[in-house]
Amino acid sequence: MRGFIYYLCFLSLVIMKKIILLRISVLCMLLLAACSKSHQDNPTDSSIKIEILSGNNQTDSIGVTLKDSVTIKVSKAGKPLPNYFLQFHILGCDDDLLSERQLNSAGIGVFSWRLTGVIGKQSLKVVLLDNNRKKIDSITAIANTIKNSRGYVRSACTPNANPLLLSKISTGRLLALFADVPFIYYSDDNAVTWHKLVSSVSFKSPYRLVSSPANELFLLDNSSLYYSGDMGKTWTIRNPLNAASGITAITYAPSGKLITVTANTDDKQIQISTDKGLNWTPIGSGYPHHNYIQVNEDKSGDLVFLGDAGYIVVNHGALWHELNPTLTYRMTGMTTDDKGNLYIGRLGSTYNTDLLKSGDSGTTYNVINSGPYLDASMTQQSDGNIYIWQITNGIMKLSASNTLVRVTPPGLQASGVYVLAGNGSLVFGDNSAIAPKSTLVYTLP
Image 1: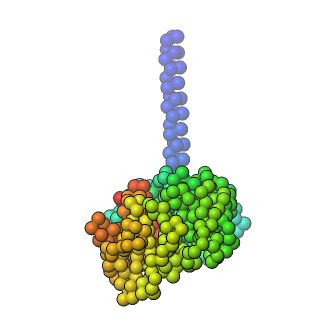
Image 2: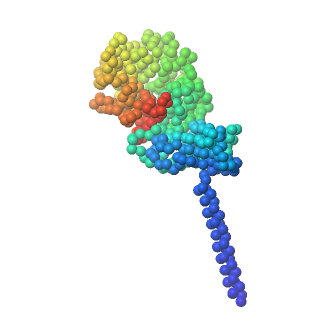
Image 3: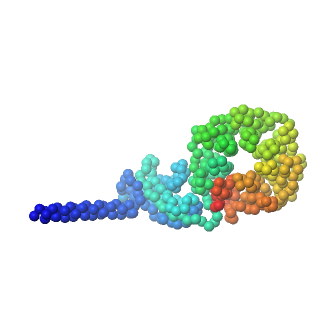
């Protein structure tokens, strides 16, 4: 009898366990069904419904704008809810780059979604705000991305502004300045995504940036020179003399000199600092006072200056040499390389452009290439090659045989702002995007 009672108790426990498990399973199924039915996130008003009408679960290549826009409908108690606001946040980008739309009379908001360079699943979070900017609800759209075959991708998370400058520091981090944007942007993934650099200073309109081999930054903003020793977190002003007139050119030379050029035309126009801007010394006198927009130091220590009117002036210590003594030619660009060579773009009277190369700071030179394109914005990039931007032909690379090879992908109109990323990608501004704003593009290595 006792054994039979034990058996009944055991059987009851088994049955109860199955009932509990069944109830838990049913509850889980109900919860999963609710989640699959709606992606809404803790609504504050249960009578408000937010839903994705179209544009969800599309598949396309990285960096492209999806064929179908993401269309959101909001209703309250079954009726359209107009005039509220939708914020569209591409996950992976900073919150300051949110796009906002106001719902129309039908309670509809539409967003054109450009994908980032991340292969796989990407997300777009849509947040509903009332007229008092209070969060009501949210919903998330999904896109699936694959590698593209075009050879280039548009960077994600950039401000809607034209790029002014691109540079790279020794860690591989890329830095960018954009027109009328009071922040520096950085990328640690070779231009796939960009982020605002949070710093101790509220800039107004930064327009020039150079760095030292130790990743110290020197930034020009509103006639002031700022220095940062911690990669842009904190800044101090280290102005040269006459900074109020405007600083038109700056470089951190291979010799460790910080060189600035101001807009005034006295003998304090060109100044040098050997202690990173703490103290400044005018370079001297006896040089022509042009509006210089670029300065480089070559391997011998000579300084080369480019003026906006097409003049190039070379400083050999106490001696000065002007490369274009007549108005027959106009210099359009220049750069120096780590082998001691000076490269100059020269526009002739027939509007043909010659590319000149000099091994003695411009005292003598050879024409190594000629063509109908204007050679400007010359730089030596981290791969050791000379790159030249031609206004009508894009970005060109100078080969060992002194021929210019186009590296800008077909269909794009590159600006003169470019840099070579650590993975070999060429990052540049593209003017063929929606006018009037340029976007950043990077080539696939």
